[in-house]
Image 1: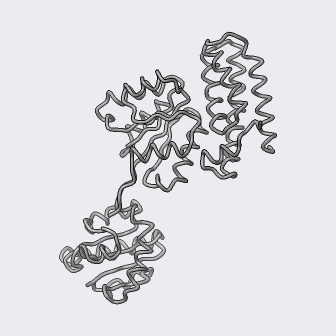
Image 2 (image 1 turned 90 degrees about the horizontal axis):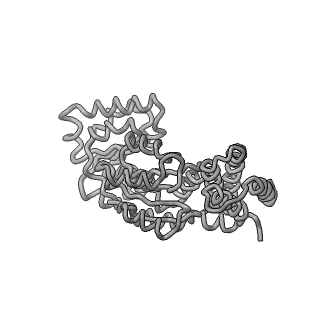
Image 3 (image 1 turned 90 degrees about the vertical axis):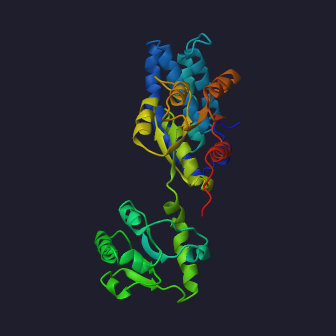
Length: 108
Length: 253
């Protein structure tokens, strides 16, 4: 199963490939700004900020059909919301890794 | 951009073009020229509209000033009765059509009118899309840009409720809000409550567009007065369908 469902993104969002890749470029920029904030929130154990940042990342990746990254971001959001207990640090590392793999899958 | 100056009679030439272009007056349209309106309409007999108040000179001055600004590439005039020779100073005046002179003129003018007809007949309704994630705002904007059934709508975006309040206070014609639920500081559901409690915005339609999909939350939003509910990830067809339901394209003519 691919990490990014490009076909669904193009069909369901009504985008052409160029549009999609432009959005992916925007996503990379957005994530590169947001992940360090998520790291800081994790270090300071700021659950509200963890939840909000994870929610934003989840929204961005899920709408571009980055399926696996969306799952992990959602898990971080749940922990941030206090629904589940646990340490988000490994999940943040996993999210970073999945995002890199996703970009690679798209040839970036 | 082209300027078309018409002198038309109700239900004759308009009907032939399949467009209701009446109900405009020269002064009103002259006032709008600077805002980018491309078609200048006069109504009734040209002499009546232009001569008694000296508006012919006024129009010539306008055309000359527009030439100076380089706003229009070509200027067309359609007129039944007009002292044509007085427009000789307007160098970009390419054609002067007179009613009945050539049946082919109607088709040619129709082709010129078509792209701009809606622009002058209706002010674009505005949609305000509020989401704290810029990529989602841009996805929504792209969906609107690419959907011909939404071409009557202009999208404005805001990244927070505070920004949205400012937009609402300063922009007229916002008929629909597309609203994320979970946003930092003030949530979408709180903004929905605000909209429904303020008489200025009670008639504004609201579509929640959110990843929050629990039945209890949907019911809560419905109870407050939401008009539509879309669960993310966004699917273009669902969004377009819901928007068109709430803000259908006006029927031309």
